[in-house]
Image 1: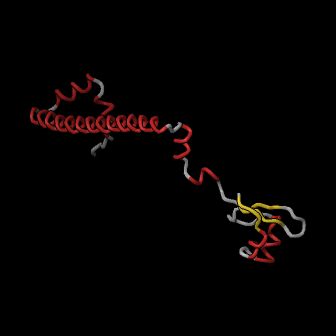
Image 2 (image 1 turned 90 degrees about the vertical axis):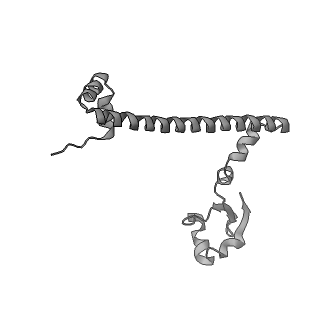
Image 3 (image 1 turned 180 degrees about the vertical axis):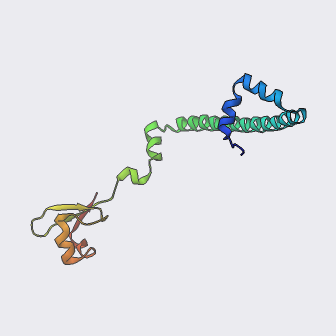
Length: 140
């Protein structure tokens, strides 16, 4: 029966230089040449990936420096810049509408998500969800 090892377990085994040398001594010369050629190809690919990553990082840093200089020229503060990146939903939260109860004048807020608050249940039952718009007083 053939034992299947994971790449991680093989890599862990070969990190020890004594085990690695023992394995290489066991290999036939053709296998060693194939390992060397494939290793060179993998090394070249990894070097290209690393070079591309470094170039992207360099371009990113250059763009950040240019943007920072331009923002300083315009007088944009870090707080203004941070506010520009806050999504609209996070700025105001859930939009709630206030409804003034006709019987006691109390204002009750409801976001129209889920069931209405207990203070509005009777109005919704009597007028419907669209009908209570006549009691709307403000939005916050």
